[in-house]
Image (cartoon, rainbow, N blue to C red; front, side):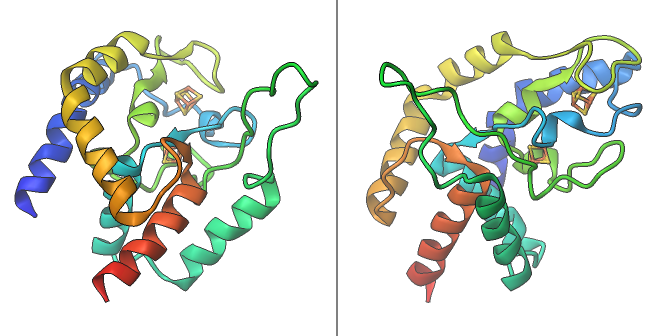
Length: 191
Ligand code: SF4
Ligand code: SF4
């Protein structure tokens, strides 16, 4: 378990360091309501491995319970996350947005530890002091790409194993669907 925790942190370290450097320079989300986690801007998708790490964190915090599962299902229903995206016959339009079930309105509104957060969440930060409501914020694609490159082989193996062990048919999906499906299968697996 400790080894798993160390690996989780290692795979996030470059993103965590970048965040910390910004924080030390006074570039923080303190002035913002957390727009990037709400349906206005959030369409975060995660891999099976990220879902498993998030699920493990929630289990350890004793937050994986009926209330949370109901909230995840409600989010899926509210934002039609289980429905195909509309298309025009030639292409399917991007992906659905949703208010993340872990978003608590107000500054610094995420209730997930940075050490268990999806990579995409860690990479989206303000780029200047006083940034707010998405103005002056961006996803750090360079750090994301470098991180992905560094852990590519290992993560592909771990994701593939989770997919085949649990019978998952997606490489990435939204947080509520990923957690609900993976969580219910892991629960059955460990019973
Ligand atoms: S996990 Fe946290 S940072 Fe990521 S979308 Fe949800 S509330 Fe936002
Ligand atoms: S990254 Fe930008 S939009 Fe998201 S919470 Fe921080 S300041 Fe707000």
